[in-house]
Image (cartoon, rainbow, N blue to C red; front, side, top):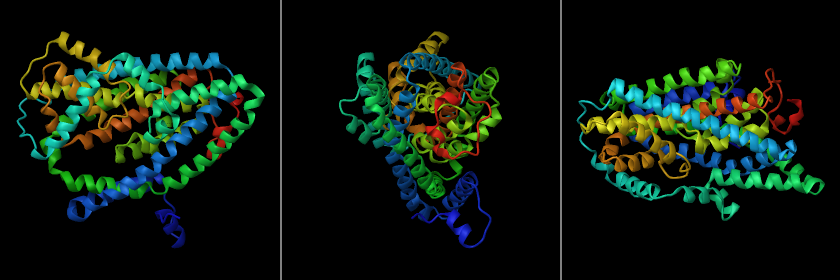
Length: 437
């Protein structure tokens, strides 16, 4: 059994804190410990690693069970194709706007102009690995990307955490269950039970979230210190401003158009949002985000399809970051890029930013490939490495929020969004019949 702040408060009769409050307190304490005792804080990274490993072990069975049950219970293959088409259209529009905002902010604020930072010697190994992966990705054709979506073995895909491959197999398996009819009922009932059990397990693992956040933040601050914020203030400020601008211009507007109160949606996903920000891990927040969106009123068939797929095709924060970071390197190197070159780079990023979420440090890998393609110095990434984690925190949380909004958009387009869901229901309501929508 995990020893958590919740159990401590119950034992000593102290007021119980919500998970959001616990995570926020852990974040503040992590910053304090990282600043005051950096030698001690650097040893706390295993707390974050342990929490992330616990979350990752849940993702494959959770996605498989919820996606198969959601599609099979819906029983209409044509609607799945329609949902998939609408989802991809929304993803493409949203990421294109994100790229445009990244380029706009980079041109207006010029974060790389006048910056002369020596390349860190400690970044040599990381830069070599990123460059090697970038070369591999840059030589990947559209057919290679398509083939990579289909797993050779679903067991291998689950072991490696290949989310898109798990989604593809689950969709095909669900369609086969629909085709099998009554014969598939024992399987779907078993997976329905598995989905309920997995969400109970998610609740158990989430009790470790404050410790994971504390370890991650303490280790990050101990490595970099807060002084690095001053050195990179212009780049960090430009990125955070661009991400806020994207949220206001795109996500808030979209929510207004589909008649969903944005603040209500943000309140519904505040726990996974804060978790994604503090751990800089999309996987850490995915199970909780899926549960929150289902409780918000989005049917499980849409949640379990849109959100995992979005982590490959709808990385709004990451795509915005790529556009801004590429121009940052160009400006730092004193290279002027014409409007035509910037548009061409945006089109290139629209393609290369898809389907490589499983590559380690995927954003930096894609950035390296883009820089090389346009004759920009790849060594500029070594400068960005110093604050990549701080930028990753912001772009990851916006990725999460963008996918939550996407699931609400698709649900509204399908006429399946429940405007006033019963928020008092247990998380196991993921197994509720879709007909209530």
